[in-house]
Length: 487
Image (cartoon, rainbow, N blue to C red; front, side, top):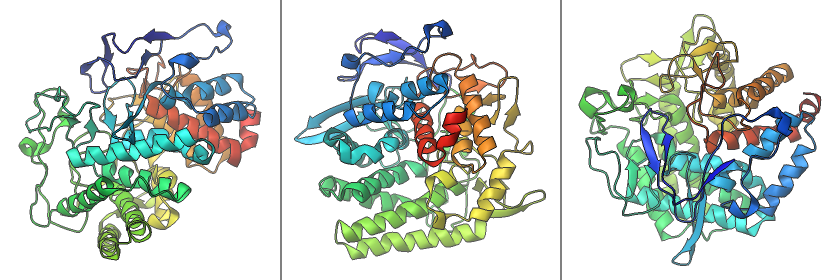
């Protein structure tokens, strides 16, 4: 592996085609994975040396050894060993600030933290939280850091480590607070903050992370959701980018599409980062219903505030009722399916981003009571068919992408989610074999690759997909161990 000191300047390609310079994070080493090596190397570990890892957990190391023994395929076991700890190895900046743990997590080759990505990246380590006190501190630190991010800018999707750093997005036609990288309103960013907090409390019962700052941030979350229902303003977001892809800006000179209030929460951007053609993103609203229920529960049990809890539950009920009226449509070939986006005039769109959050990820992400399983499985059949406009089949693999990643590009995240939402052993096995084939000798996942050429990937260091791959293997090792022994 090529190792670069955090002080060394280097260029890395951003997924939107721009270039950024990674100047280093406080205490964080920067790693770029090399081009494919010879398989004669017998699958040598691609992890940093122990002393160069950003964060280590004995519980995680034990889990790696435990799971590797259950995997018959040497190459797949090697990929798991590289991918599962990649977030801890390369992206974590952990310290104590004013006596409180603080955890800043970058997503890979971009030196900023997403609320969504940082939660998703640590998610598969939650099961080990009672075995490693330092790992528990990492989670507390991430809750503290995310509260800071929300209080800094409740619409921001990404933030810098340094609170005084000025955004490099000078072409964005909106005022961005110092410490904020991008202020792109995405519903799921705030949902992930709730998801992280709820899971931490659910597993530990520890209330120490839920202090005054957390309370202020969560109150701001609810107010933001309420404001984005657009009951008093049909275009409550503004974001215009003068450079880069058109999809990364809002329509109508940054104001977004107009709409009538229908009870759903409007989103300026999809989880992919592309601007919304229609303002109401269905999977994001389904996620919000679950998050509001979790927040209500926490305010009863942790904060002892029934009034605010009822307010959260009331809004969740309103959004759920709106989803019942607007989220589902009858497809000619697949029956009732979920739309991906809707406006308030009866129009619906039916693509999907192979992301988390997405339509296909609903079974993975949400509790069963918060989506209709029959509608979901109809939707899943549609998404995996040739009728889905972003479904591609090539020499290397079949899968799907979206407007964010370009024509004929496939996202490994979609293949992983297909495996994680499947009950069919044969389908899961196909996904595993595809993932083995598409890593192109690197031992890691990538953001995208070309359907006909696995070497055609733009980002070699994308920790979020690496960790999701690790989570998939963990699940299979307990739920379908025979598959890992037979591949």
